[in-house]
Amino acid sequence: MVKIWMKKTLLIAGIYNILWGAWAVLFPNMAFELAGAELPNYPQIWQCVGMIVGVYGLGYLIAAKSPLKHWPIVMVGLLGKIFGPIGFAWSIYQGTFPIKFGWNILFNDLIWWIPFTFILKAVWDRRGHSQITKGIDESEFSHFPDRKRATFINGLSGYKSSNLIGTIDGNGHTNLSIISSLFHLGASPALVGFIIRPSSARRDTLENILETKCFTINHVNKDILEQAHQTSARYPQEVSEFDACDLTAEYLDQFKAPFVAESRIKMAVELVREEKIIENNTHFIIGRIKKVYLPEDCLDDDGHVDINRAGSLCVSGLDTYLEGELIGRLSYAKTDRKPQWI
Image (cartoon, rainbow, N blue to C red; front, side):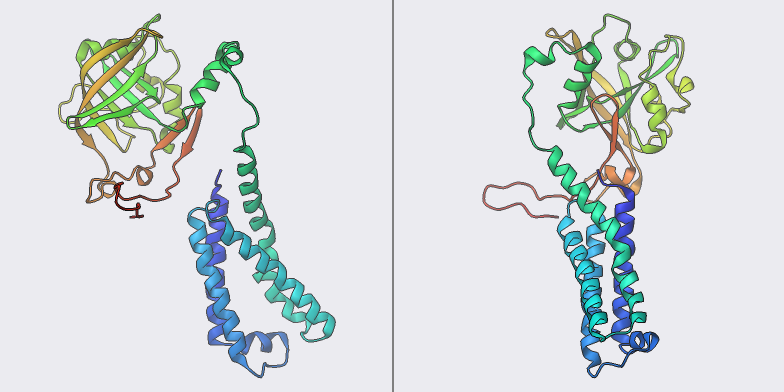
């Protein structure tokens, strides 16, 4: 997993390299003067070094956007930072450079060894974890303890969206429930669907939707993650998860069901119909999106919704939450051309 320190390290390294490179180009003799070394006969060579270091800086800035994806840049950078001190040590042995010149080696090379190494280690660990190590057939996982089996099977579908479903009953009692099963059904009309678990026990979300024919969908973001997760607890019917989990019920444009005020992307949805899935007694809810609320800077001219900018989270399994990492957008697939990054 990408850690924030990885991005910050490469960002700082990029800025430092660009500034140091510019300094070497503009003032090629200064490093030698500060170290008490003999001035070079051809300062242009030192200026070329500055240009190379600056180019490395641009590479680090690119890698900072996705350190694990751009690990080759980090590897090349680390090799350069290893070979540099080796060359300096050899020059000291030959008496070419004074020891004072080592401050360049300290800040240009040595202090980056540890963070760059840990970034590459994270890449290695991730690749090792992705290898298939064991086959588990149904006869085995069907005998897992209930919670272990639920956790295992829920995680197999990969990353899923994390949303809060806001509802209200005919008496004005509100309910809020976190789900990870929301999916797109169609754009015209705008349909979405999600699954509600078996109704052997009372499901306030299901009962409220069937009674009022409406509900809201609210993206979960990092600021409300713990409160959102807590809505999965089984509170009594008379207790509102909005109150119990310290979230704010918000009513917009006279839509009956409550929105989550702290959510940044939210939708007003009307019930189309409920389908019972007899294989496991779950309920498939189909809804039609009637209105969408989102930050202005999260909607691009072509209709693309930037959920990463809105801070929307995803979930793996039952309880593992993740932030999205933007890789990029690809053009609409056509048989007569290869996709292009847009």
